[in-house]
Length: 304
Image: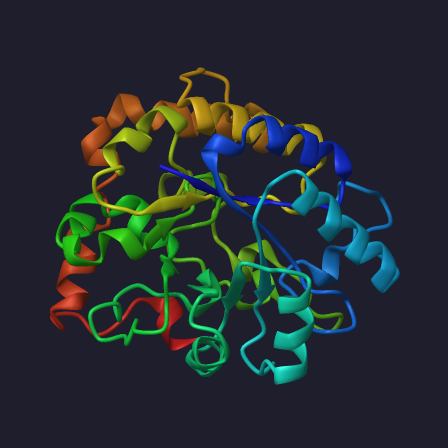
């Protein structure tokens, strides 16, 4: 099972990925800053390895060359629903030899496949593909990054076996499985990210976290086509730490500690004293099936 992995514009990360490329499907990275926004735009910094963005197109293209020299594939994030791809943009990124795009709408997916059917088209998690998956036209998508809800609805994935090769899940998310997401991904100066409104995964709701521990990926392997690791905003050493454990499926009791407050990490680990592993990863299954069968109308975030 291969991983989609983040690139944070630190060359040291490329060296690590080159050594571990047998685990990697492709790197994902944002477009150049003048071409389109991305979900981390608002938290970009000037520190390499912490959601840094190149300041010039020359610098951006330098990183692309380094990725290709390492024998690694990359795809471009095109995550703003309202931002249509143009032929000029497709020409530019194709000239850089991108393997494809992660897109936020079906229009861009169709345009890419019309432009070049060999380019990968990945349905971004910002499309929040969940209960609508059986009704969604996936013709133009090679992969679909499923919404966090599926991280806790393992038995539903078993029912989607005809889509297995397309399905990607994000195991290291710390979001609430029902995260509204919009202002989480795209905060503005007027409406910055507010955890109490935008993602309720607080200490009181740690049981709703979508996190999947590395040693538990084996439960999902038969039902998905791969995994995406979130983390472009992380420092290089943190990304390497994440990748090491997920690539190797290593069990480590304190694995989660660097990413959560100590009290939250302890509560998350403690959930496995309350639930069996199978129960933990199926806490949303009944609800998802009911909604997919139209026996319930919606979850909160669908109405946002």
